[in-house]
Length: 268
Image (cartoon, rainbow, N blue to C red; front, top):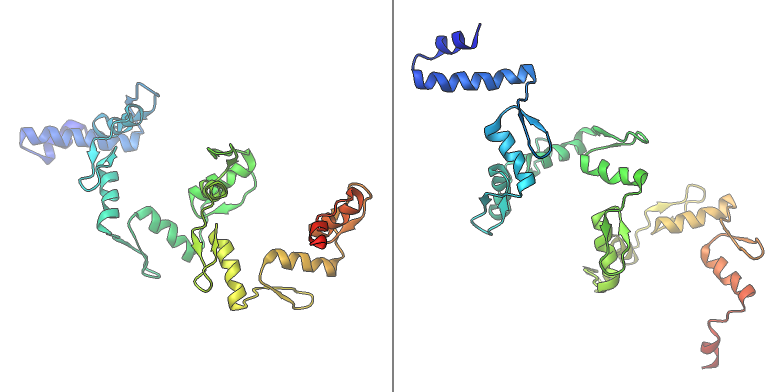
């Protein structure tokens, strides 16, 4: 059936007929993959000029015509603004059918649901490791490329993850935002606080498979296991003698350097 026959058979009214005729032409592009509208800046092609191409061109122009009435922040599309407004209203319209957790973004719900399904649809082309989200795989791929796009403005150190940079910057600022509710001691990272809290709870989640000894830190378990394996990974560059721990190596190296760091303490 031709486009003209289709539109005439469906709608009699002349003005509305043109609308349906136009919509049908746009719809048929889904089947033909026709993309007649191209961006003059980058050459990317689109099916429609009125919505898709115009929205895309804002990437180049920087135009953000949709403004939030609550905070004044601007957005490229009305949908971005709609999603943003949920930060003010607290609305979370997307619910997980498995556990009831709610989300403000549909994409966040879809990522969350993979916790229940175990699905990992994003696979690394270099090593084959699979990930739940596109964000995780992008961060992982930097281990292969060596890319470190986040730079410290104080010392120039670079990092592959923004979170790692923020943690590093606390070295310069001295910020310790994580506080122990038992003793008030503060820490730079939530992980260091978690490890510290085991001194209060007595928790030792890392168990030696050889002798059953428990440890509060994974690093301590790995060091302990060398007693069973006999591994001595730290060797002295002066005499070749090997040691279980880095600390033992450092103490030994003083026999070569003659360093006596505790002499002043003995004289007091």
